[in-house]
Amino acid sequence: AAARLSSLALTDGLRPCRELRKYIELRCYEACVTLGVPTMADYCNCGAQLPPDAVFCHKCGRPLREIEPVELPDTPELQPVAIEVPLPPPAPEPRPGMRDRLTVRVAALAALAATALSFLPYLNWLGAGVLAVFLYSRRSGRRLNVEGGVRLGWITGMMTFVILGLLLGLCVAALNSMGGVAGMQAQMKSGVDPNVLNALKMLEDGSEFAKVLAQLFVQINLLTIAGGALGSKIAGQRP
Image (cartoon, rainbow, N blue to C red; front, side, top):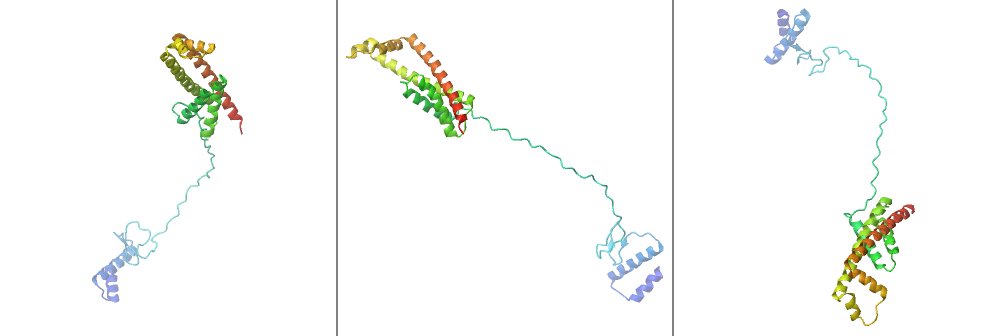
């Protein structure tokens, strides 16, 4: 091998030290391969030094060994799976309450209308519940169910009772300032209707006045609640 390398070196001529070194290493590799001698480093035919377990030459791209194709196992075909997407929950029904500004405004407006129509007893309180449901549905764009109509009618009835109770309290205060029913009769030149006198005497008596308030509380709330339920039924039948 050494004699062969010497003859090849003399035949090819002198080269620079680096090129000569590569040339000698390449020839040594070919000789070791021919003689079956194991080598410490592999070299490509182009002279590039190869890393261990190299498959291709990084310089010229020549394949260094055959690559056996890897057979992948057969994968079963994926079958489409139907996924049921749950439907979103339905929107909750509108629930009027004292913390809702729209509910308070509508109930107060209906209560004022019922107080202004006090000359139509019972009908004004029933109509107040219907009016409150109509105004709420009109301004919010949502229809109330029966439960919501009943709740709105109850709130309207409470406000109507508060307004009427305040008016009756002012009447009692004015009557006391005039010296009661007797003093009012003395100050008024014309006679007073007996029905009005009986009503004023009832207001002058504290126990009778409390009974009147309790009776009004029950009547007003029952009629406004009924009006709210009726209004929700009528609003639900509209297209």
